[in-house]
Every structure is written in C-alpha cells, then in structure tokens.
Length: 526
Image (cartoon, rainbow, N blue to C red; front, top):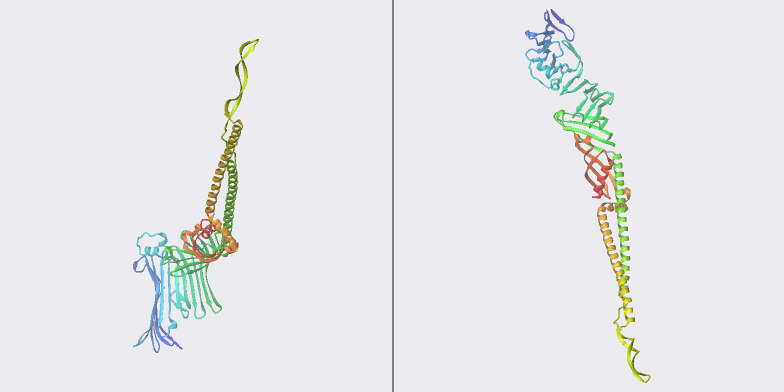
C-alpha cells in the first residue's frame, strides 16, 4: 500500500503487512521519505514459540527502524524485541524484553525499555539444561519476580507496549535469600519518587532482625524518597530486633554499597536507655562483620554514681568500725598492761622494803641441878643431895631473835609469792597487748582501702567523690547479648578528670559500681 502524509510531517511511503497463522505473527514494513530523510521500519507483532524448532526458545514483538539523511549518516535508530527461553509458558520461563531508540537530531525522542522476568540463577541453568546442584538460597538469587526499567521524554509506543514518560525502575531482586523490591519513577521536570522495600533481614542467626514495623514483620525496612514541587520527603526506616531480643525499637538505617548501619536512640538496653549504632563495612552482607557502638544514657551514669558512692560508703563504714574496734581492744589491753605493771612495781617495792633477818647471839639458859653435900645428923656425918641453880646450864640462840627471824622469813615468802603472781599477770597482759596491737596492724592493712575511702569522703563529700560524664563502647556484635564487654568511661574521680577503659556489666549496676570503687580505691572490694 502507498501511504501519503500531509502537513508538518508530510511524507510519502510504501507500507506492507504479512500475517501468519502458524505461528500467529503479524509482520509490518514501511519505507517513507520526506524532503530530507529516508525512513525504514520493520515490525514483528506476536511471539514465535519454539522458534527454529527449539522447544526452549521464543521471540517476537520485534522492532527495527532507522532514519537516514542521504549522503550524510544514520540520524535515528531503534531496535528491540522480546525473547523467552527455558520451559515456555511456565513459572520457570525467562522473559527478556528490550527496546532502545536513539535520535541524534532530536534527543528528546531518545528512549529505552528493558524488563526481565523469572531470571533466577536456578531458572537460567534450567533454561539451558545445565545440571548443577546448587543451594536453594543461591538457586533463587536473581530477579525471580521480574525487573522493569524504562526512560522516555514523551510517551512512545513500541510493539506490544507503551513506554511511559519519564524514568521508571520497578522490580524485585533476590540476593542469597534477601529480597528487595524497588519502585523508582522520575517525571521530568516535575520530580521523582523512590520507594524501596525488602524482605525482613535476619543477620547472624538472630543477632540482627529488621522489619517494616513492630506490627508488620512480613516485610523488611523501607527506603522512601519523594521529591516534587510540594517538597522533599526522604526516609529510611524500619523496626530493629537486636542482640537476640535484647533491644527492640524503631530504627533509622543507612544502606550503601559498602556500609550498613542501624541507629537507635532512647531504647532500653538491659536496665536503662542507651543510644546504639550497629554497623559493618562489607563487600557481601552475608559475610559482614558487624560491630555495635553505643553510649549509655544519663540514667545509667547517675545510677552507677549512686551505687558506687553507696559501695564506697559501705566499705568506709566497715573499715571505720573494724579499725575503731581494734583500737579499742588495744586501749583495753594497754590499760590492763599498765595496771599489771603498776601492781608488779608495788609488789617489788614490798619485797624490797621487807625486814631483814638478824644473826642471833647465844644466851645461857639456867637449870636446877643436884649436888652432894655433907652434913651432921644426930652428930653423925652423912652425905645428902641438895638442889642448886646452874645459871648457864646450856647455851642457845636468842629466842627473841629467832622469833623475829621466823616472822621475817614468812613475810618475805608471802611478798615473793605476790611478786611472782604480779609478774605472771604482767606477762599475760603483755601478750594480750601484743596480740591486740598485731590485730590492729592487720586490720589497718586489711581495711586500708576502706580507710582511704573514709578519708576521701571526709575531704570530697558524697557528691564530690565521683561524677560520670560518658560511658561508651565499640565491640563485636556477638558479645553484646551477654551484657559483659569492654567499654570506655570519662569521669571525674576524687577531683580529677580521667578517661579509661572499663568493663561493662550491664545486667548489674552494683557489679559495675564495685569495679569502679575498686579502681578508685584498690583493694576495697576484697
């Protein structure tokens, strides 16, 4: 047929069509000419299944066109079509469609369209009948639900479809089990819309779980950007379940080709609130090494201060009580020793001042003796015995002196016995004093830290003892659920600003307080 167009697009041409029943195809061809260019167009409407006798191949909806300025060059070119491979008309059929048009004279007529369906790794291998056993998660990777992208300055029709004005990207990608759905639309010059959704993410077997919201756990986090004449709305958000249910919170996310970060603030982290960042630099999300950085809230720090002060006060009180008792025992033992010493001195003085024995002289002891005496009785001389007194019948020690010496010896014996008792009492008191002194020395050593704490309390008072300014940490994600890992602290301790590493024990503020008190007063926790 001859085609004649009039008006601004005046041209003359030859148009022809060919229709086939098997396969059901409609071929079209046109050759047009205007004052400057020659245009050639060939189309194929419909799909030829089992093309060339291959049961895994189909193609159709083809387009080939070009505009030529005679003697100059090709000024416009368009080509496209649809190809299907694999098990045709099934869920494993891979459908690829592509069209592209280039106009070097009028760039506003440039366009492209591309789409692909069911293009997972497993389907591609099946399409080409390549028998390789793959893990299910790898076999499903690809574009299982399809991917579509297009661009055109103005709406344009190609075989089998209409390409809409603007830029558009819509589809789902599956990477090792993670699915991401994206809708991107750019309408020149009005603005653009980006809406990206993905499957819930479970990383590290429960260490990180990301959902759309606390109530929607069937979908993953969402990236949404709507830029238009009314303003700009950009949001990357989701619901995070972290560290095996330790933290559950709405979260802000940052996702790039090399970094993944989750930000949560004001969330309960064990006992009190904290601000947390979970992040990883990676080439593959599956092989990412995640770390958790965080900062504990003021509630954490004030609670730690109180528990630390209480622990220090308790230790100071124990030290004061124990040392005061030991000192009291020493004073009592000293008093007993002084009393025993006083009694010993008195006993010694009594011994030293007692009588001294005398050397007794001899004295004559008179006695009655008998002697023979001659006398006359009746004129006759006879001998008779008569008594007489011998003034020195025998000699003996002076009884008065002997009696004095006996009394003196008895008194000395009694005084020496009392002196012995006084010495024994003094020795016992000395041992008691030595023991009490040794106990005081040992007690002072045992409670040295507590005594230092008591002195510090007197100097700084309870409020000036400690001020925690910051507690933060940056650790591997695997240790967080235990609540026990290394951290860092900035604090004013005993009037001095300090910055130091500190072991966090987030399930017990008291345990952390004991450790902090130990840092301030080494030995206080013993």
